[in-house]
Amino acid sequence: MASHELKTPLTSIKLYTDIIERKMKHYHDREIQKIIDKNQEQIRRLQILVDDLLDVSRIQTGKLTFQKEIFDIHSVIQDTIELTKEAAAHHPIVYNRGKPVLVYADKFRIYQVLTNLITNAVKYSPKNSEIIIVTEVADKQVIVSVQDSGIGIPESEHEKIFERLYQVFESADQKSPGFGMGLFISKEIIRKHKGKIWVESEPGKGSTFYISLPLAKKPS
Ligand code: ADP
View 1 (cartoon, helix red, strand yellow):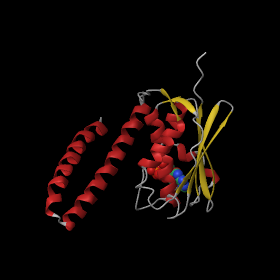
View 2 (cartoon, rainbow, N blue to C red):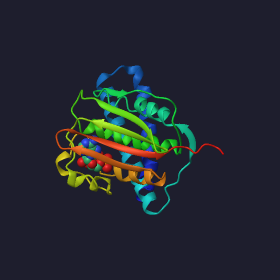
View 3 (cartoon, rainbow, N blue to C red):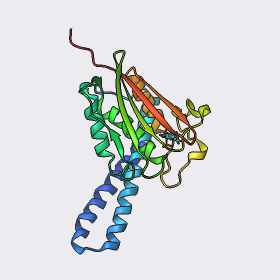
View 4 (tube, rainbow, N blue to C red):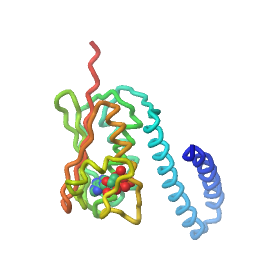
């Protein structure tokens, strides 16, 4: 209920800020533009937070729904890289698009999971370090991995990070604080696609997150 109540005023604030931004463009006032940019950034963060809260409550009430279709996993990976470009501006992303790999899944939700993995890789690794995305097909499933060379995660936390609101204490980042909802939501999305999500990681060496998804069945 609370997250729904937050969504409406937030949508209005966004709309009014967009109008102010458009009108102020004519005045070429750099100071005001800077304030508007900061406002937009905070609005964006609030929108992500409210959307995550809504997803968590949908999961808890069994109301997270999926609209599945057949698509090439590479196209969603490519779109995610494109749409996270700004957030990953200081992290070169290495990815070679391979032959089409068809899955039957909810495109938007898979995009949401990949966005979470890429933005986490950015958040928890040093500037200018590479993020490597690899896809592999085996046993009627595709495995997508997102590798960073960041702070890593101790073995004792590998399961816990997928729990609701769980964060590794040492990795708490003041600049881009999260709430430990992303991996919980991702796990539920992947589980509902009959796939798996897991991590291999060592502190100080980086982390590789994996998701597996069944391949789309060929029509018989
Ligand atoms: P958050 O919003 O806190 O990033 P997530 O659910 O996405 O929430 O992640 C849970 C926790 O797992 C994070 O707070 C962080 O401690 C840890 N974590 C996730 N991804 C990484 C990564 N790539 N490297 C190191 N730690 C990570």
